[in-house]
Image 1 (cartoon, rainbow, N blue to C red):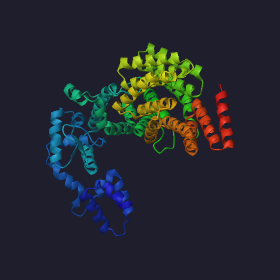
Image 2 (cartoon, rainbow, N blue to C red):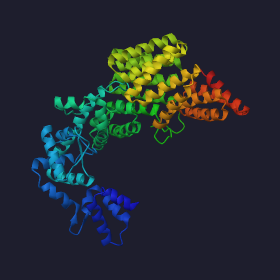
Image 3 (spheres, helix red, strand yellow):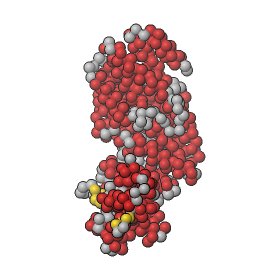
Image 4 (cartoon, rainbow, N blue to C red):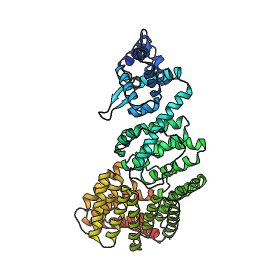
Length: 555
């Protein structure tokens, strides 16, 4: 273990590993763990990697001293970045030089063996070996004033932020209000920006690791507005791509910085994002853990308190569009608890606020949750509000929410007995979700299709539900998981496979308990009761059916 750690801290560089071995050979009383400990400190690592006439630092100096000073400066300033790799435009921003000059200097650094090239034309990227980065930072601290170093970081982070905001505007994702802060932007030349943002999602694909690293570095350096804006501008992309762990960890790092600095707006925006990602997905380890929630707390029940707290944060920050978003989240929680009238009241408040403050995304979300609150009790109004949500989604060009609205409309038409129309809409939403590579929405479309197929005796029901289940397990989507298990359990029961039905439905009940969605839990308990009865487990059946009755009686 210690030996592997030494190689890792040497970055696998043969010269560095050779020096580490020479130091150990000359000190037979040293343990591997001792050297690993010494190398762990970045400030001393290059000092420790010297033995006799061998030194890593000396090897780097050969290339560095041959460079012209402008290229040396760019090398030093780029070494300040934590980003794992970067494009030429980022180097231009950090050094505050034209992109063409940056590209020439990057090539000189490659020739000097101080930089590595990655990617392929026309999307070349560059990265430092970890030890070379430390060498660059040493020279930056010695040669460049603190203000110059801070300005270089601010320009690089500002360039990432400026591009990310424009890219995010074109990525279809959650319809939250786009709320910005006071972090300085560093605009790119129009021609460079146009080429980079020709495919916004592809830009995020390339830059997301660098954006995450930059947000965390800004948080560590107490560049608080920069940190939270770099984190927040990634939400739509992370949602569409299913990068939920990256979303959580970067938001948490930036949120800690916001709270420490008393940045009310940043705290509100990041809290909103964290509520969204932790309400609808679970931790990657499958624990179901949710940020800031005690063990055993039901997710959808806790959402009520969390959304009310979020509303207070946005009101304190003076951001009514954020308040509208918080009210929509409150409405979701109330629907899950079976408090439909209260949910309608909160959603209508959200709709009024979003309309008054030019927040069409908030209007679309409010219409969606109003439709869900009406549910099957008034399918005409359900379809009316979903149709309006679809209209607004198309108006703002958000194809992700358009897909969601079509999906819910398909389900509503199916429940209204319009099977052909419902199936047509659901297949369209499925195709759109797959085109967007949006696994969250894809899984929901599959679930509603599976339910429609099951209700009409279509043999495609099982394979469709299994496809949704696979996505739910892969991306830790608790709601989708519970629903897919419930559909499969009902299909098992209809097929006479009682043992499989019990297995699927017991797991479905377990997940619904953790989520705290009362109507879904009651439905799953009733199905499990039927499965227990069919399997000859009368006592177990009586127990779960009684619990289902108690849940249904609560108003």
